[in-house]
Length: 307
Ligand SMILES: [Zn+2]
Image 1 (tube, rainbow, N blue to C red):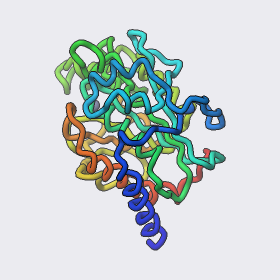
Image 2: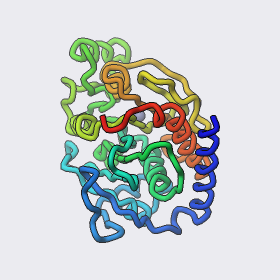
Image 3: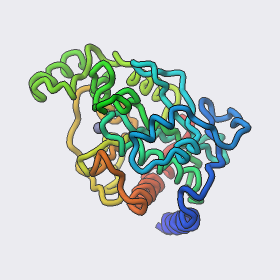
Image 4: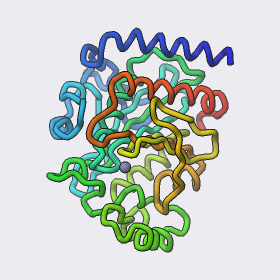
């Protein structure tokens, strides 16, 4: 407990010092480095991203400057309609054997607040002088479903009408996912799991990320149910900010079921209270601090990194 108290104190002091300057006042001077951890960052401090103009028209509480300073880079993956799936990494000073965390936003295109919170957390990951028991390599994919987000009418599914969060290869998918969709959702078009698991480029990309990046933890942002869900073999966080744990069960083809239950890769699912607006700045900070505190207590001291 002594060690935890120390970390908590450093954490809050670092955040206070950093955030006093405000988000917009700081240049995001640490550029993104896609791919392997040892890759050198590009020379320019701020990469201008052509996708940002389209993104910020849809994202609440994110300015064009903030998006451009996020250092998002294009992965090799493209959506059904050919949009680039963007990511960025935040590397620790010691990159030898970091704990790897994947943060996802925008898996559902009609939940733009989830992408915004991912970008706000990215800023905190870059600029907060927090101290954790183990170095952490963060990877952010803030808009996994860019087609759904950027359509004239934003929608949950991707351009093929597939709910990406039902398209992961859970055991018995071919039998369970279509049956669940037909019998339990009444063939809700917003929850169509697709014709087969990993039928979609966006879910395939995330699946590849799980195999290549090998995250020790996935944090997946959604909205608007206002709760925290968790799948995995460890003690879940009891709350993040005002969101309290309420484990709702598992669905055929969901990320939590696939990664958390089937692959034993812990998945924190954050259901924000609103799909259209972000929480206040102080609340987003508190959620971030609570996430780091839980990681410090439950994961970082206990998990051998580099596996
Ligand atoms: Zn969602």
